[in-house]
Length: 269
DNA sequence: ATCCAGGAATTTT
DNA sequence: AAAATTCATGGA
Image 1: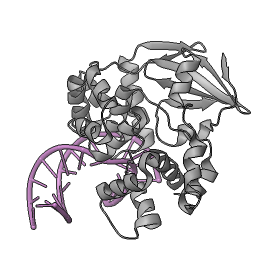
Image 2: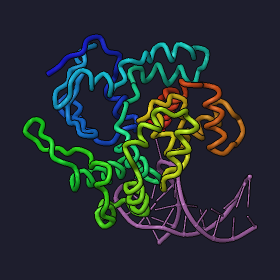
Image 3: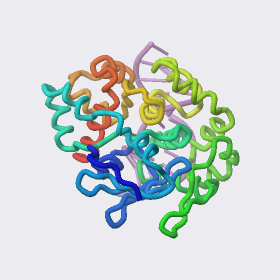
């Protein structure tokens, strides 16, 4: 087991804010499967404890411990909407995801809901992911790029009309593209992602924010549309305009602002 | 039964 | 270019 001391994190808010899908909590631990990793984490006071096929470097990278979330939100002390969400959910952190798992997960997310997305992804992993053991239990890695090549299996995972999107994206995706996207500007990276079927603007923004460190990405779904309209815009605008407005207003903080506001809206539903 | 869910693609105004 | 319709599937 490893310990990282004095960490600014609230695992409950971090995992339950809808950014990641393969986790569950049990006896004070959060069990996490992501990419080719399987591990459990918990906080004891301000210490973060972890165990599994991970090391400290991975945990710091995964939970983005290099980022100072307090500093980000200290810039919005005059913004009541943001401050309310920050005070309520302090410790919520963005997670740095595996690009391929993130892409497939968020293609599944369109016109769906979190329990169903979890079911889709779990089924794909159980079918294709190589086994991983933790606490004497079997878990699964996420299928490698190229492995999701059977349309019937994708249908059996209840991905519905998204099956063909995953299938084609799986055939076209390459490791080199991941590097290109990572090294591209927000705008260029977004264009590259949106060439794939099933990836529109909202899904692209999720992928850019959660897997490619594009802090200015501001995914706008129906919930964010409502919040932004009420808090800032006062008039109806299409999602793309709302996202552009948020990127301009919040810059590289947009992604963190979005995550807090999104979680706040979902809880107060 | 009917409607909606963290949308995107396609078709129709 | 903007607005309406379609696309599977589980749950309320």
